[in-house]
Length: 604
Image (cartoon, rainbow, N blue to C red; front, side, top):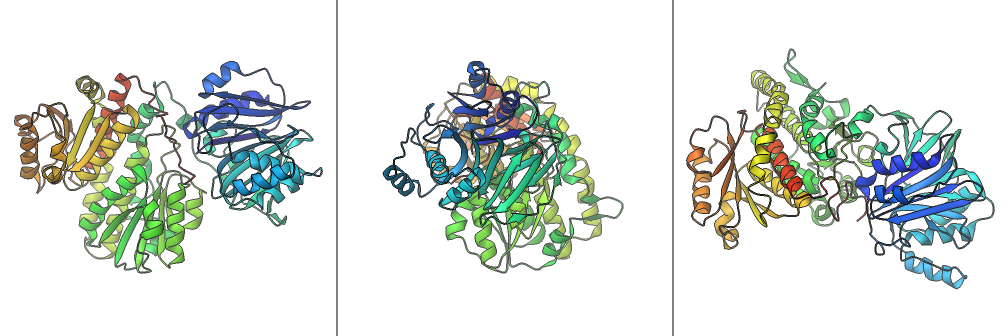
């Protein structure tokens, strides 16, 4: 969850590190720090965000260094607990993401040997372990130290005594090497160095690398050198910039007209009237599965919940949607199941652990993710990329709708393979899918009117979101978006469940956002609106542009462009995102970096 960057090259390293840390700030923001080697190791750390860090940063010179943005997991927020952490002799600096599970035992052993600890972090143990093993070879000392550590980690190390080297290692926490010309990078996330290079090498678990400005060598923890494939990233650096928008989140909401098209690109074929995936995915989808289990966390879980409605409706196959943190320990892992994992980053720790357990049990595993080369893509039997480009805002937006698009394509492909739909029906769905970017644009065009509506809501202390059928998980996601960026207490409910408990909380001071579709539940959702209005609640309805009756029931109506009920979830999602964004903006909240949250949850 913390951000890591390392650089060796000819550029002024301070500028590279600061710029990279800004691009990693979504991973951690309670403190930041850098270590730079010139004639000696210089370290500077500061509490707060990267802009605060940058204002106070001394004018360190040098061409090799490491940096870190921290999201506190072990030890309170303080300068002492910020990274880099140092050895006793102050010559070795370590930045780290992960958890050293056996740090107490290691710390006690090191203290008996005379090591003095200054922080509350588990990371400091690593610096002292390296110092204890150091005999003039940083790579070897780091390798010996890493072998003593239990838990997940990505670690990057520099030493004053070997001023031309960076050593990095990972286990169950991402670490990526960026390849430049006369310069090399190492980072927890691709956006950190995307401005400088698109050539990358993905480190695998329990690998260790040695970087210089002109060379990269990778070894296993036994010391044997390994040959690694170079990959090319097709993301545009502009995708990782605000491009004139006040927040990344708003920019990424507006990206959706393009990202929906990208998710469809190369997968739907109008003339041939078919949907195609890569060969490994196609081979998985030919099988006849008794059930499907969708495994995910957070917003990805809600996209999976939408997928349940889509897949069951089109295929008749039972679908269970399970939280990865629960499934890994308690879920049924039947080898006749298809397990679909969903993770924006492909590095979500609970999701990775869950799909590993599924594979051990003989399940077929298909991964939906946004990052090529991520751990998830290497664990799964097959994977589908959402092709959304980097998403910087902590609150997922464009990746959510892209995940839904992929799930809909999977539902159609499975349905066709099972002869549930024919070529003509598939063709009609393809035509509807091709219209989605235009429907997304129509939803985005309502941003200014949604902001006006938000002025009636931004001072509220609590909001209900309700829906039926496929709109139920959208209500859950709408509530999540609002609570995570505006800090308003927001809850999503299946509309029919209001009478089974939630009504006890509903008062005239709690507005209700109702998602309305003209489907088989239309009369029921109107009745639910009536029940809420009877308790004095203000009703904000998100309804089809052709629904001529909803004005009679709701106080405020936001219209979404008319589209089939199964695909209306896309423009509805965009409207919910805009509503949350504008409310949070009116409340002057930290939209891109909500308190206590990080973009990628890579530690348990």
